[in-house]
Length: 196
Image 1 (cartoon, rainbow, N blue to C red):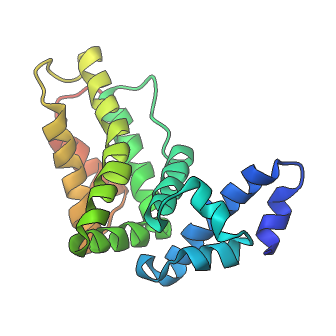
Image 2 (image 1 turned 135 degrees about the horizontal axis):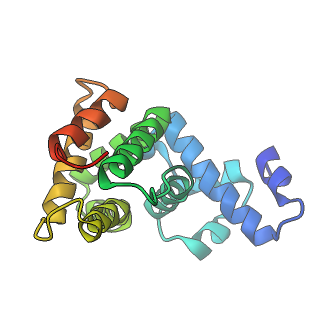
Image 3 (image 1 turned 45 degrees about the horizontal axis):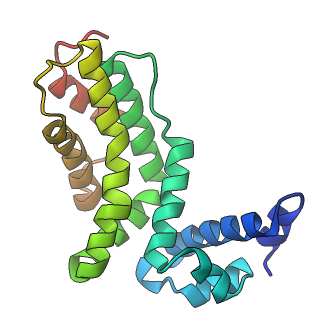
């Protein structure tokens, strides 16, 4: 077993420690080698667990990576509270772009590439990653309508597409940075009259 698994095992139930070791290891391997090189065997070896332990919780390597990314997003991308939509959206986008610039963006790009030539994985990618990560933004926009920061008839599904579409374009094309200036520009264009 690797040192990571031993260190997190102390004082925690073995199954909880094993599960976290698997999630952490899957992200580490994907960052290092890319999603296409990730295997259940490799995760098991580096996490210090058996393959049956992995299959007890997940059916595929994709589901492991999606859960690991979701777990990280929940820690690093909390939904802004008690803010105007303009300020909350800016805070959310800045945190999102910062996270994508730490190596997570490379993983997301590799997942998107995998989805282009594997229809089964594409369905899983949409259901287990895209749809889930879309919900916090939709909630933010819905709350903006409730507070009066957006008109009541605003189509928040389309607005979310515009916001994430801009993010995806820069993430995939890499023609310009995903940074605080871009976050400010998006918010200024979409919410020019919102209170600060």
